[in-house]
Image (cartoon, rainbow, N blue to C red; front, side, top):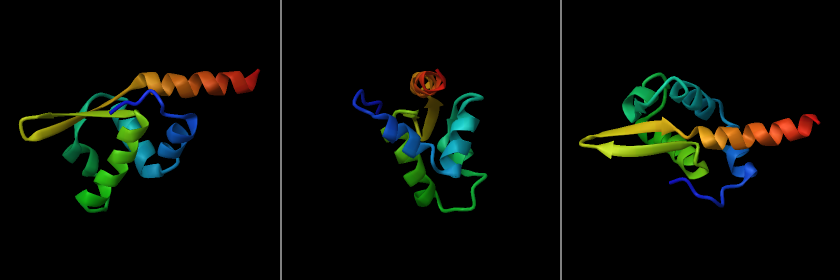
Length: 91
């Protein structure tokens, strides 16, 4: 659900939580199912899904349902947007 009107605030907000940062780090190594992503965290699946929704709304994570499995991938274009902003701040 990548939305072109996503702001830097949305991106930084999505990354402000350690659980969501860990999900982004994991997806940096490749796609994963929701179950694989949720497994390391000591929370219920509905609680984890709230984190995943924030990441989806920010455009950082895209999900696609294939059969009974929901696969997640990282949208690196959103990370590049953050990187570009950070680089401009260093000048």
